[in-house]
Image 1 (cartoon, rainbow, N blue to C red):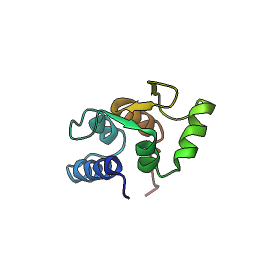
Image 2: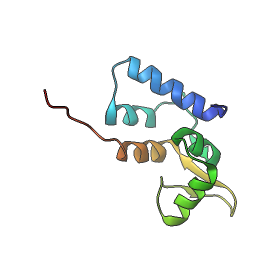
Image 3: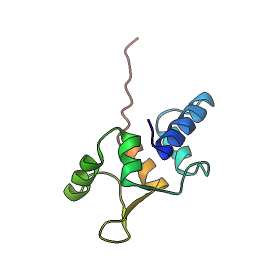
Image 4: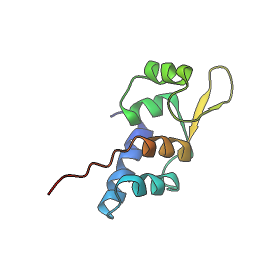
Length: 98
């Protein structure tokens, strides 16, 4: 992982999980974590969720993915709360039978 924002995101996930947070609570905490950048670009998003930047662009054109801000025709940014809300919406809570 050579993307600085993705490394920071991964490090903060590791920190908060070591503090006992998991699932939706983890993503809610990440949304307010000032150790993370306030906004992410498409390359950051791609690295964080493990897909190509082209896939991010395709998802955006299909209306999928996190909410975003279009600052210019080529400049798209994703706020930290919107990214975390998107990730939380993808969280699946699996309950295992005892």
